[in-house]
Length: 290
Picture 1 (cartoon, rainbow, N blue to C red):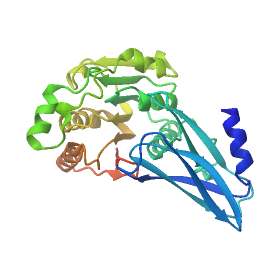
Picture 2: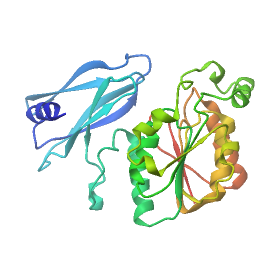
Picture 3: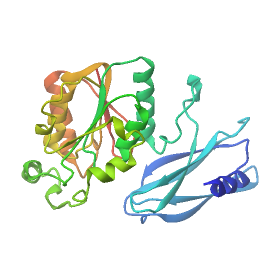
């Protein structure tokens, strides 16, 4: 990491701020393909090396007359062991607070950081939870954002349930029945990633049956189950239990691969007369507050 930072400091002028913005770039890249991105600024060529991941691309923009560089080189270690390097500038510093840069790897995690700041600063009561944990990467960020709060982790830890995939096929929402990507998820894999494992409560099984016996109120919930039935069940379960000032973030709302998510969110919100706010991450997540 120190070598990368040294190279970075050597090639990027201090008076320039660069920002990396996520763009959809499906079908044009292969996972972890190395690219050299370069720009010309005032007849001076500056180069930076970045990686491009499958289904994601990056672009560099710059702002002149910045007194001191506010760039950061973020290091991410993927599930496959491949290394991904991204450049980010320090947004939201105008709030006069120290940012948690280990969280800021993309728009979704930056959104989590800001929501967590609001919840913790306003002392909103409640536990936190995620439904659809998979390999635990976003759960790790939730655990890091709320180190003093109990974190409930709901998942089958055996892949998609047939109870949910049948409807996906009938409605044409997704091809989840053939998706085996999450069959090898285990609680041990997830637990090893948690910075505060003592705060984690694993609820293995089909949701919402797995929530039986949970009596907590919640200040933050992540719904990332990909499928219509568990998204609708998650909203039905957690929204009534959400503290005033709390948030629910639903992933994959705008995904063309998981069309049941949008249907579930729109249906539940229309029934309960509540609104939601889309955010511009790669899969078009939405945020609901109370």
